[in-house]
Structures are given as structure tokens and as C-alpha cells.
Image (cartoon, rainbow over all chains, first blue to last red; front, side, top):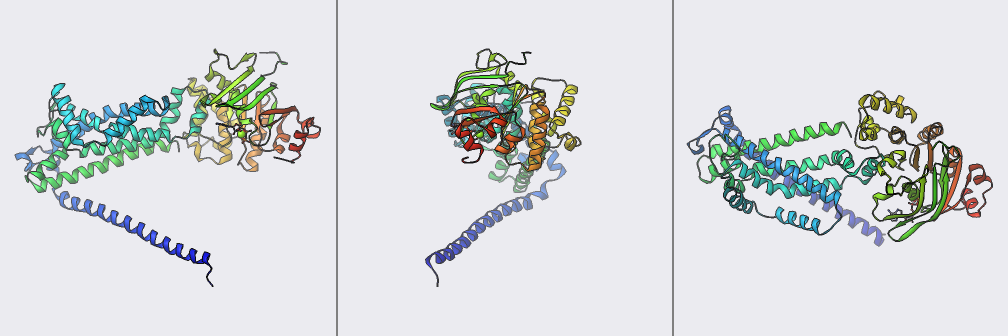
Length: 285
Length: 254
Ligand SMILES: Nc1ncnc2c1ncn2[C@@H]1O[C@H](COP(=O)(O)OP(=O)(O)OP(=O)(O)O)[C@@H](O)[C@H]1O
Ligand SMILES: [Mg+2]
């Protein structure tokens, strides 16, 4: 005879099976979606990625020629953004995590960072246009674009770095202090290496956002197709190029080619960054 | 400093608090040079707190506060002109769980040496000496650049000891260093403690009464923040003055 407890066991087993099925279905659905997007873009884009496509400047508004200047523009803007946001973001994260107890200053910083993280990128674009392009008279330029993107990714870098720093076990700090280290030495030699992985993940995420950004960049770096000659040149990034090609119906072929290229570059950045970190960490774990 | 009869540590009326709660109630204790002093007692006796006071690791906890004096070689460690980082190099600490830093074996042992900017050659030499003293050298000499965390638990704990010994401290504090270790690793650590006491003063929270009996010169019994008594291990284990000590060492409570 089935006692109530046994009955409960069988129903909870059935429930568990259903739950597992639902979870699997969700995972497979998402995976299928992602794979089909990637396959679609690569299938339509890869055939156009030729040596000429990579090395020639766009001609005829992008109908002909390649995308070389947009690759250079994308890299330069991203480098400017990361070079500014990374030290500022990591510094702020260490300040928040290590140097203060919760007080009004940390609350303001955290509140601002969280609010900034939720603002649509076009608002950053507008701000960058008014502040960097017009007020500081930097014009439509790689510098204006990079500075704007730096502001945009700063909250992400602060948040991911702070989380990574807080996740470093307290014992590492205690060990470091117990061996006669100062606070600064402890942070630099014991905490930072352990937080590396998380900080790099946040950075990769931010690089991806810089590479993929359109709205904020169009308003601050312009959409010039020339090869940039300095940081004060205007430029067009790959994402902006793709947007213009597709939206204005200039060339769907080259639009797909550019999209595939953006995807491949983001993959490569991921792989390279991870290999470097792994090599660095391999010595220690 | 050279005076043999002067104790290494003189603890006078030490009280310790977390926030407003007093957890050590005025302890008086002298710790002699080159002795192994074991501090035993049931849970929450305040042994960890006492050990962490001796090198001011307690300072890391903003809730923690002490009153009284802890005199090291004639100088109160709570004085304002004490340089805490220097104090911690003189009074090293091995924690209850092995805690290698996420660095190579070599860099773990060299951690404190790099901080005092010792030359490369001296560092290498010092690392080897320290690993020999903690009976780990033979096992790791061919893999110094592999991660400290790749070692077994017992090896990791000896690595932590080497890391402290590399700094040539005057006192070594060990808070249950063998908890969770296998008997062989435990024996290894006990052997090296007996060896190094020629050079160092050792204060240990042993992980059981048997360990205290094996390695100590003197034993102190603590209970709920009081030091009930401290004496040679022979007296503590055969003829303690206090009934509670006798109950504890005979296993009547724990
Ligand atoms: N960080 C802390 N914050 C607040 N109270 C603490 C803290 N650490 C220890 N205590 C309290 O202080 C008292 C002494 O604890 P302590 O850890 O020093 O004892 P112990 O003898 O090492 O005990 P155990 O056998 O558990 O290791 C206990 O009542 C404990 O709850
Ligand atoms: Mg303890």
C-alpha cells in the first residue's frame, strides 16, 4: 500500500523529471538560436571576406572596395576607450572594495555607476557630441569617440572589477599581511593577481561593446571613410559601416561581410585575451 | 635582548573585545625563548584571538580591540611607534587551513622576502633553507615553479611554514596547523617544530591534547577567555592544580 510519504516521493520524482526536461528544452532552444544566428551571418558574410576586402579602403560609399579604414578606426577607438576606462575603472573598484567602508561617497559612486550602466548608448552619444565634439572642440574624431565609449563602459568595468576583488578570499589578504606586507603591497601582490580573471572578463565584455557600438560612435567619431591619420581624424567603425550599408541599402553583400568580420574579431579578441590570462595564471594555480 | 632569563613575550592584563563583547578577560602569561608553548582549551576559549593579538593580525578586524600590554623583548607591541609590518615579520603565523597564495611554490616562500626587497641570489638561498627546515625541500626542489596549490594538503601546510620561516622570525604562531592533515604530514610538521625550536619561540594551538603532550615544553589551558593555568606539560597532564584543567585533559569535557 502506498503511504502518503511514498506517494509524495513519486510525485516529487515526476516533478523533478519535468523540471529537468524544461531546463534542457530552454538550454537547447537558446543554443539553437545562437548557433543559427552565427551560422546565418557566417554563411552570408564569409564569402565576401577576401584579401581585398580586408586591405582596401571602401569606395563608392562602401559599394565597392574593402573595409580596411573601418578596421583601423574600430581598433583605434577601442584602444582609446580601454586605455582610459581600464585604469580609471580598476582604480575606482579598488577604492570601493579595499579603501573605504560603506559611506556616502561609495554610495554616490555606486549609484552613479549603476544608473550610468542602464542608460541607452545614444544618450552617451549625445553627451559625447555636446561635450567632447563641441565644447572641448575635439570635433568628430577617434578621440571624441574613444572618450565617449570610455564613459559608456566605465560602469561595467567598475562593477565587474569590484566583484572580482571582493571575491578574492579574505585568507589571501590575511596571509599577505601576516608576512609583513603593507596594504598597498597586499593589494598589488596578493589581491590583484587573484582578481585578474574577473577583471579580464569585464574588460573583454567592454571591448565587445566598443567594437559593436553604433549610436554613440556615429555621433562622436563621424562616419568618414578615409584612412585615419591621427587620433583627431574622424573615422567610421565597422559596426557603423555595417549599419549604414544595411540601412541605406548600399550593399547587402558588404554588410554581411562586415558583420561576419566583426563577429570573427570579437571571437579572436576573446581567445587571445583568455590565452594570455591563462598563461599568466597557469604559473600560479 | 640578549638576556636569557627575560621572557620573549610578557602578556599583562590582556583583554580583548569584539565590538563591545569581552572575549579575553585579563590574561597574564610569559612565553619563554626557545620553548614550545601549547595553548589548549575547548571551543571559544579565545586561543585564536590571543594568537592573532600577538602579531596584531587582529588589527585587520575593525571590530576588534585590545587592552593591557603585550611586551615583546621589553617593548609593548601596542605602542604607537611600533611598525606593525616589522612586528609581523618578527612574529610569524601559520593558519589552521593551508593557505598557499595563488603563486608558484617558490614565489609563495619568497613572498615576504620580495617585500623586504632581498636580492635574487639571497632569496633563492633563503627559500631553499626555509623549505629544508620545513622538510619539504626534497619533495619540491624539482618543481619550484609549479603552483603552490598543486601540492597535497600536508605539503601545502609545510609550504606555509616555510613561507614564515624564510623571514627568520623570532616567534612562530601556529593555530591548529595540523587540523585536517593525515598522520604522516602531522608527524612531519611536529618533527620540524621540534627541530626549529632551537632557533625560534613557538606558540601553538595543537589540534588535540595528544599533540600537546607530544611536542610541548609547557602547556596553557584556556577556558572561555581565561587562562586557567600554565605549567610544564608533565604537571599539566599528571598533576594540574585546577579541577577544570584535569577534567579537560582527561577528556571529561571538550
Ligand atoms: N571575528 C569575530 N567577531 C566576533 N566575535 C568573534 C570573532 N572571532 C571570535 N569571536 C568570538 O570570540 C570568542 C573567542 O573565539 P576564538 O576564535 O578566539 O576562540 P578559540 O579558542 O580559537 O575557539 P575555537 O576552538 O573555535 O578555535 C568566541 O566567543 C567567538 O565567538
Ligand atoms: Mg580557534
